[in-house]
Image (cartoon, rainbow over all chains, first blue to last red; front, side, top):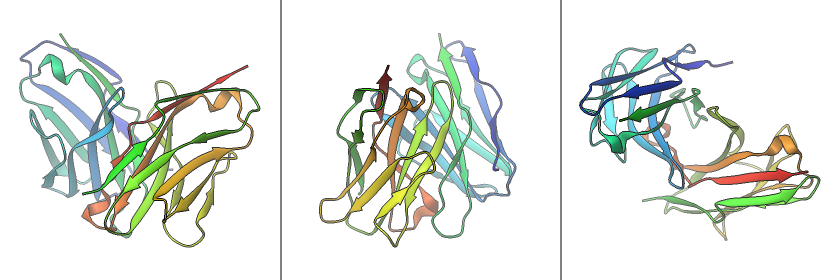
Length: 113
Length: 115
């Protein structure tokens, strides 16, 4: 079974702090994704990566950046956290070839105060 | 551009009753469709998928969904629900089989099964 792990389940940060959310997958997947989940809005794609050091913006990239230095690890960075970034953050991965379902991590619930 | 609309934000049902969670999509190219389930305090798990072939797809726990191209729908059904089916359900699509497998998600439907 593919395992996608996220560094924290719950995180509380202050406004203006730099925040790192880490995601690791153990099945050699090429594609990795970061979403935020808010009630009534479903999942919205922030950024994705299809290879090491490659990244593309999703639908809501403002206020976020990402880093992928190794194939198994994909980091989401909030340069200066704001209260409107309080949300559930979900990481996912998938194999590159053909259409494959994405495998999700357990999520990180981030609260910015 | 593609979009997914889940027509009901909440669906309450009694145990052993049938249920249908509705999903409509919009896309100008061919689509690949998925249903995911999210139990409380967990990530999303794949429930079932339509990639090609038979338009009726089934999951191992009794759910089924039918791809209807003419009505641009992919509704999820179960003939008899259990308390353990209480969760949030998301419909998602990949349009055209490109863009590195990006998915567009619907807003989610919270299914609550009452005893």
